[in-house]
Length: 95
Length: 490
Image (cartoon, each protein chain N blue to C red):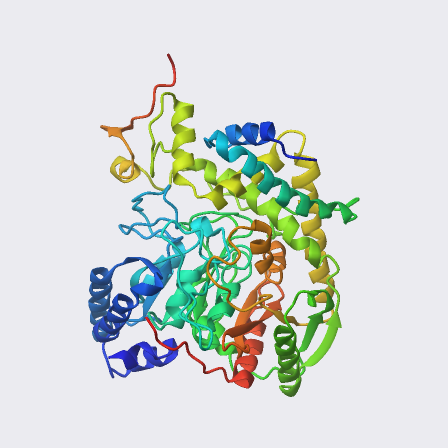
């Protein structure tokens, strides 16, 4: 496994982070260094081991599907970079 | 009034109760200390007016006979906790001047109990770092310096502001968070006490998310008892966090000072790493001797998958972070850099808002979750995580707690390790296992190295058995009789 410049570009695109061309090689080097160090996980025998996604062993609780709070557009919109009335203003998505 | 800032939380609460001084007086003393310590860069936002307002309200509550358990105690709050009406940044530029319209459950619990907020504490960006150098506000400087030197040292990270503020007596205690060691390593570097409780003890609601299955809030303080008092207030079931455990919160302070006679304490042989300085090894031996003298039985145990904890963490945590941090898209809050198209705006906003370490981790997380790599990396790491948790289960069939060093070194110089990510990650070698398994861990100051810098010892407990950790760490604290303080240069 090696992370090349094309992989860095692809992953940066997936992550929606603009990375300038002059950063790509350096990033590939850094990510390779980290992933090479991570490769040692291959030494661990994990056949038949149940993946552990959470340290909480009890099932997640369910609650009634009802509105608990809301109805306060001023609070919701108070940190908006741009707004118009009770709406966020975002770049045009559909031509 | 500098003597008021030197009090322990416990002593300050006593003084407030018997009216030796008021909440306003002790708050003013701390506000002055904070202002005088700007060279430490521990606070990213001082809130002196809010502090005095809260202190006045506290004095009024006490006068009317409604004093809470933390009534009038001035605290610092890590900037990862959302505070209503007070800018909360997570140490990142991407949140801009984000001002929450809600209060995190942990801080709400502190205010419910009467505490006073002095301001928001500096931290590594999104809690990703071990030296505070990834903060968008510049690094915190450790109040400790090596004897005869004036080089600036790291307070550790990510809760470096919390650790420095507590060590420099700028607050009676502070909130912090720990995803891989971010409470315990800074505690070790600053001669303070820090506990990461069992995953689910403290609600994560309103705390900016880094890696949701690992993040846990906890206190930093100058004594074990102070940490216990703070945790008792911070913890508790919260229906707004589905992973918050529906269990009662004990009075943790009642465990401090209890006899530890007959407790079995394990010493994991895998924690004797080759690169560990002899002084840390010697301190560990000293800790073992102290617990023996206190009547504990010491048992050698094996945690065979220890060396795989850090690499597993560096898949799990970035994977969760890449997902959690997808919300910073410049649309609803925080920084927006306008681009030609929607995607362009996303990419430019995130490029400008995130720092290098956060970007690195988002890229790794995105990579290990991407098509074709999910099974090989992410699923593999979750299986290794299970084996690490199983190691602890096995050990805890034989022992009541584990004793280890907290960190593989004392505080190092700012700038020393910032160009090698993996070298920086190794700071968390002794702490990260606990996050993966969801267990409680506490760091207690136990001694000084040859340069006069503090070193900590870590105790690890069974899930929900913080009580035993408070008893054992109280015994260690008593035996170590750690009284050293940083010499004031700021």
